[in-house]
Image (tube, rainbow, N blue to C red):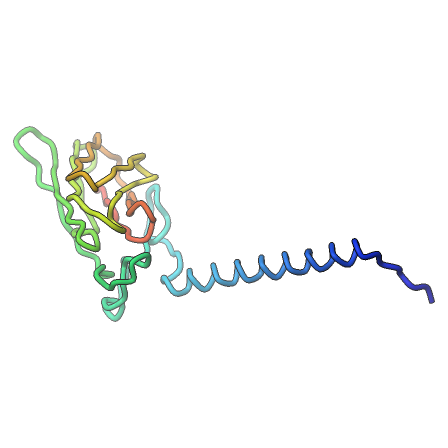
Length: 174
């Protein structure tokens, strides 16, 4: 039988490799735990967005869970609150969204092919920014209300969120 000789440098390398492996396992385990705690990711139908936004749940029993995981203050609502834009005389559909701890409404209904303006009320803290990767906007709400102007959108579901991606909403275009 032959013995494998290890030098001090080999032992240190092995030690650090094992530590790095343990850190990676812990990271992925905590990530999976966080996904499970937030309700996971599912599908909501067709359109550009195929993930279910966190903070919007079909279960009424989740209504006491905070939608703002970064604050944990329980001020957010996990219940879908729908709001439909109204078409003004100039042919533009408009809607205003409150940002007091959550989006109200958090599901915005728009007509396909009609220009739209969505005004997000001024906010701070977790809700200080609003963004949408799907629609390509990012606005800072700390200095006042911001209006997002959208050309007529194609039918589909588009997601928006706070800048920390903890509080979510949807724009449903039909």
